[in-house]
Length: 485
Ligand SMILES: Cc1ncc(COP(=O)(O)O)c(C=O)c1O
Image 1: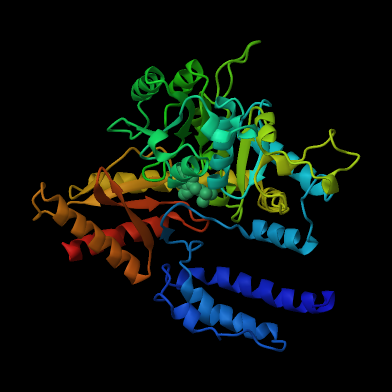
Image 2: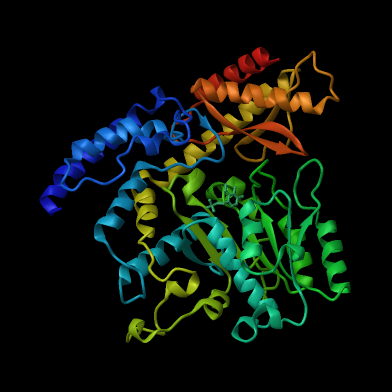
């Protein structure tokens, strides 16, 4: 494709995307295809010759759009907000269009330095001290893996350089809660700690946040048994209920035992953009003073969730990036340059060698949408979630099941005729009415289990969601629950 052909096709595609976003509200929210239907609509071989861009756009319309749950839809309340702001989409296009490759600073100095600057902008915007240095990873899943690799090596005396984990004198243990994201468990396994060395610490039964006294007991039991506590992963905004682990108390326990503290704020990090939500990060910073004791070691959060920078864009901040570099640095001769030693080599801060110019989408997002508009949207969503929680609480057949510190409301309907102790029947009822809402195509929310029983999670925060959308969802929920009961 020549640049001129790209210009023509690109304009057609941008027009198509703009039209698609403009009519989203009229589409069903949940994907309407059955398993195999998308694949069956495509030829078994690609065409031999050239196709016009119109043919591709027609297939986007015919095959792809029905095969997508429209998470940019104003009535999407499923999972977590996965906003892909159009401003950041332009940045992504610029990144791919430039075709830069981040192998070393020398391969694209701007790729490294825009990333450094944008990470620092985000640090300032979220109120973090200059003690933190940032890098953009693809996802929070990668960020927690990278953090746990560094934690493993620090606790194990950098055993990977010798006999690896098998040479560690004592088993290394990791602590989190059952409410942490599944990516934490995955990272523990991938980093080689082993499931037997993962402790799921008890949570407070009301807030679902980590119980620091239980953390202390678990750590001390391991020490007594000759194990070496290596890391704790605390969550600000758990996936199920947005519970906030008590960071000051968690950090205090971890520090006594020289453990790494990783903070997973994948969703809640966006709220740190709001000064009134900075309390979320209490305990994150080292103490003021010469020894700078305390604080966490790493923090990850996703602009690609609620804030709305298109996936994939996860910020990872570290107090001491050398801990990563020591574990992950590579120095092949073909990547050396005269700038080495004076510049950041981001390949040593993570797993891939070839890095995309991800900073551009965050840069475009901040500059084209503006920080104040992003903050106003987050405040609107928090307000809408509070409003919904009030409606649910006011209805005697409904319950809000967990505190609502952020934008997610966990709710359950108890039909009047159903015995309160028939949990299985209640589960069937919950799943039936949630499915009725989702099958209607008029809104989408995801059921999840809490204390072993199904509930509905209403995650407010799609970019175009206004109060009238939340009110329409609440009406749909009540109708569906009444009809299912
Ligand atoms: C608390 C939490 N941590 C981590 C993740 C994983 O994020 P990612 O998809 O960026 O790996 C999620 C995803 O929803 C999450 O809710």
